[in-house]
Amino acid sequence: SAGTAYSVSGCQATCTAPTTTGYNFASAAGTLTINSFSPSGVTCDDGYVGNVAYTVCASAGTAYSVSGCQATCTAPTTTGYNFASAAGTLTINSFSPSGVT
Figure 1 (tube, rainbow, N blue to C red):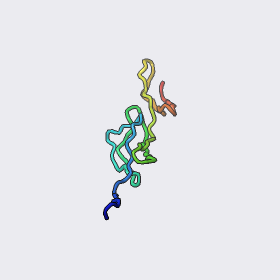
Figure 2: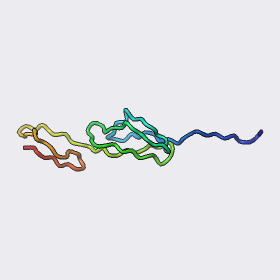
Figure 3: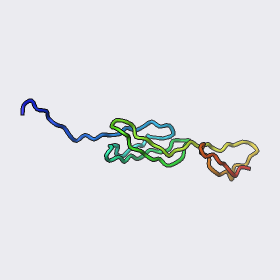
Figure 4: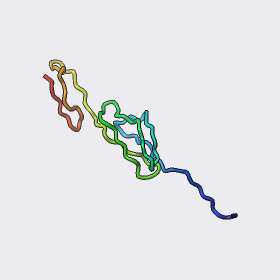
């Protein structure tokens, strides 16, 4: 009736994509609604390794978070050393190379 408020429905609270260093969001896709959160497509950026994990945002309009990618080193090409059998862990947090002679 006249003078009463109308109601609206159908909108769903959504998360936004973050801009976290070490992650590539170029192919980010999936569902970003808080109730049906299911993002996909984010990968570790160049110089990082790991498996991307997603965490839903705390409130509408804020960024979801990502984890799982670790910064990594590359084997040098220093003269006088043999890197043919180089192995081990080259992430910065767990640096433990082996096989260099």
